Image (cartoon, rainbow, N blue to C red; front, side, top):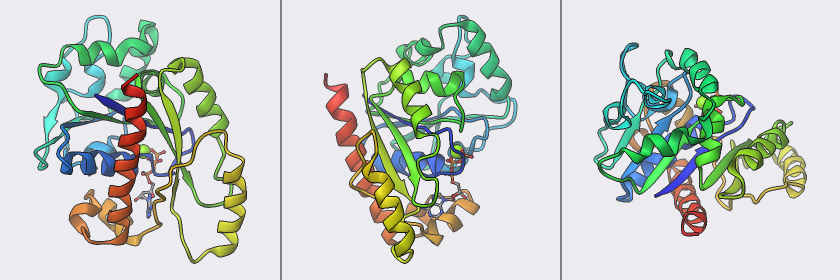
Length: 256
Ligand SMILES: Nc1ncnc2c1ncn2[C@@H]1O[C@H](COP(=O)(O)OP(=O)(O)OP(=O)(O)O)[C@@H](O)[C@H]1O
Ligand SMILES: [Mg+2]
């Protein structure tokens, strides 16, 4: 299995949008994929077409010394045959403190995944826009940390902090990559400035960039994926390319 964690302490940079689309693209390419939602906002679950009731099982129910549920029982199918979702609900906000107090949060994911009856090819995790027990659990367990960078002023804000946290908890098991999101060919002066900032990056930059696209935004407003809303759009193509690139990058580590 190859595991990807979308992370950034900066909010609204595209973690959820990219995580849900990359998971769907990997599934559409035939890989059995689990989208694991670790953000109590639950937007990744909704984008993937899953809307659990408030009191339904959520990802965090499968964590801890005596988990309330097995991960197996938390996972829901989607309209895509190869895409499954471990959903987040708002209840997760209080379960985060339990995970923190438990003390073994860095082991939470491997332990929960151990009990799965059927293995997955890909694990894609969406994390909240802060460093907490959920984001640390994801960073500890991933083959590839993916940090979206918005192509705008202050693009690198918070990058140093997420990188340090990842270095601390991942202990060299995985790799990291930054992905340019909201790329707009028309804003040439901004692009020149952000290109300069990206040249100083302390982590590799993905070759695939995600365009700023109204289709993606409109799809998101209706909690739909652009693959279903505008499947032949340019942004859909670049998201599929990004998924393949990240899959290859994650493979370099999971094979070691
Ligand atoms: N490439 C893009 N083109 C157009 N809109 C985008 C793009 N990427 C993200 N968005 C929009 O930006 C908003 C924020 O995106 P998203 O929710 O994915 O960010 P996030 O980093 O997960 O935010 P949070 O920190 O709150 O979890 C959403 O409305 C989404 O539709
Ligand atoms: Mg999000």
